[in-house]
Length: 407
Image (cartoon, rainbow, N blue to C red; front, side):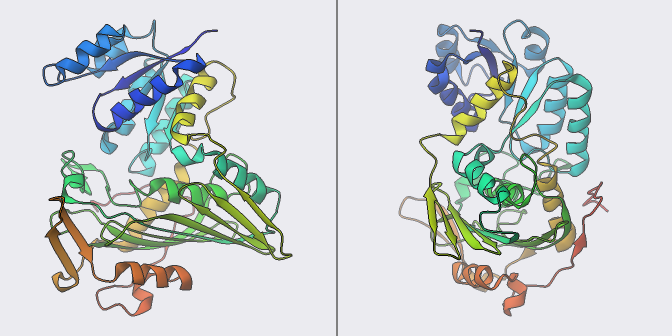
């Protein structure tokens, strides 16, 4: 059987994860890593020798790949900088390649709309690497919700606390930036590390099988505790879908401890709970309880597997696309419109110090306690009477077409 040939742009950081995951899929004989782009072949000389020894073509630029790769590359994987997503995805599709674009799809709704237009014009797909939309537990949970297992959907709420050290923000030139070199990035927790879980919330809130929920309004608060970044690191969000379902989202990179994402779903006949390890529990008002998990399916591999099967004609379309992730971008853009600015936390509430592992850490005093309370009460931080928190405006995002923070 013909295999889907993949090219990966890059060999470091998450690009290396793509390469390793493609190797894991090799026994299934549906994928093959055929090309890699390595810009600095001196710095990565050993890796280049290894790749060439495995028969993999190594290009020194994206343009060279686009010009010369058509005979053995079907899908280009783009684990690249957020602000380059739109341009590189569009170039790939216009040159006749399918594209697997790492999340988030793009910083602005205008860019996503451009991708949708090019996807339709070229007939090439652009799959978005929202891994957890590919997760077996999320897709099974969606079926339960579509079948009204917990009745009509009322609200969804998610929280997650992942502390990030200075090394995280030093991993590249745009990390921790809202704007970089005049380009919109929005590298805050909602738009990057926790983006999967906001997208999950919107996916599960929709009554359409492969769609995310269209939004009516958004209100958000964006805060910064880290003293050396300009993006937000602590964010909370309220939203309402056009169908009247409420959503609540609470995330921070300035916590003391790790708390993996937790999603709670409320319906008229019961509740559902999903956690980061994919353990899922549905509790009905009649006392029935249903439990399931990922069934051994790795969502990171499923992203690649799905793209390969669509290319081979064995699957109709990708699970995650610019079209069905557009509402995620509307939520993010609406959040920034609502907040107006990122508010710095006064220094008396922030501790910064070196850990025993020599990592420079930032902690926002009592943020876990505050977020937990906000989650339970379905409030934003300003509604809890917190001294440094500030109320923001509610934004109507129906028919949302443009985001411009430079205004």
